Picture 1 (cartoon, helix red, strand yellow):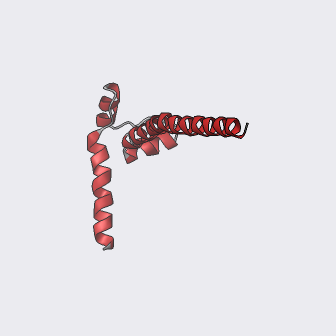
Picture 2: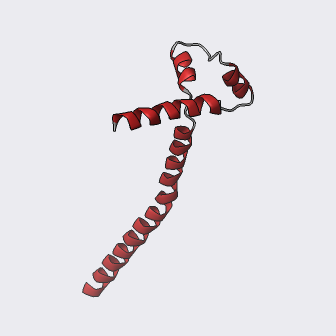
Picture 3: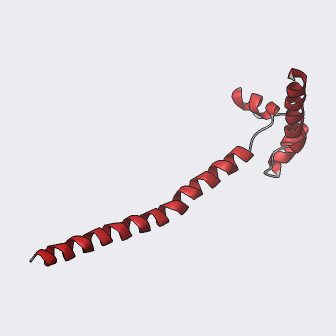
Length: 94
């Protein structure tokens, strides 16, 4: 009778271990997909001129931004201009 209980206990422990490992393997890709979406959103930053207009509830009126928006893109000229200003500020503070 004692060996019967030990067998049942061991089978239960094995079952719980296998279940925990399989859930861990399945959860990995699920959490990884969330991080990928967050990175894509971070990459789609708006130029400063477009952010100001959006804050006012309007659309940016720069010609380059309007043309880029028609193509479904972000204006690279304005986006890079904002990055250059940030870099010069960092260099001046050093």
